[in-house]
Image (cartoon, rainbow, N blue to C red; front, side, top):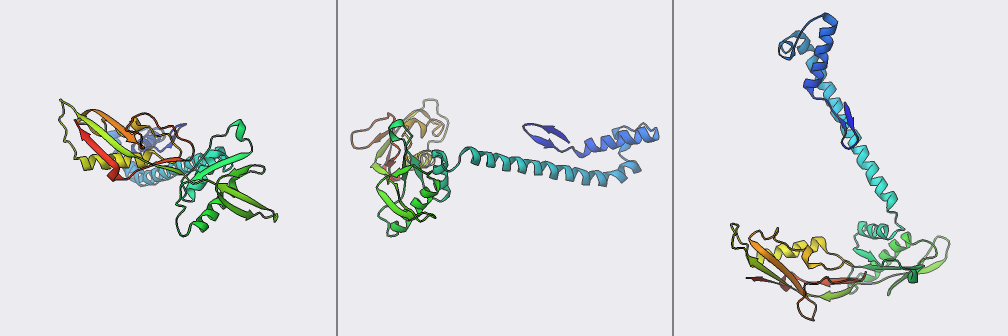
Length: 267
């Protein structure tokens, strides 16, 4: 098998392995078989089944290497993003089913940890949810760091000491969306209905936007989503009028909307 740093071990083909057998037979017995004349010989018939099994083993070996490489990649990612780091904490909460964000550390916040978790504080089971979240935060917070927020749980550590662990709920801002699509004079594509366009936009935002991210309208819809258009413009209104500028978010900001809040304008 050959080996390359980027692709790993590459199994030989059956024809390549049979070529090695043919060369060995010619060397051992003084024959001059080429690829065509070797094909019908007893040597070919005898070795073909063996070569099939050998090639299968090479394929399995290459697959094992790829699986090991994937394992090392995942392990290295975990090492470089431990739970005690901000990205590691967000990943840890995400694995438990909670969408979260953290405030970027600055000198003025030394020793403090600000976490926001997107859960419904009015849920009847919220008390249990709050304790579960703060327990996860407790598992990630290093000694000496004080968590900040309004959602507090007092948790007893194995050394019998009790500490308050906290996080914040999102600052929710409902918005309306307006998508203006300019039809291309060169269009040869089927124009989708307003309902279909609204669904594409809705899905795009849900896939790309989350708690604590800046809301960047140009990221959520383009002429690639509407190939019949020459131009698209996405705007949002949080109560002050429609704008297309970037919404600069704090770590606990979350813009919210339903598909019924989307208006599609065709020009």
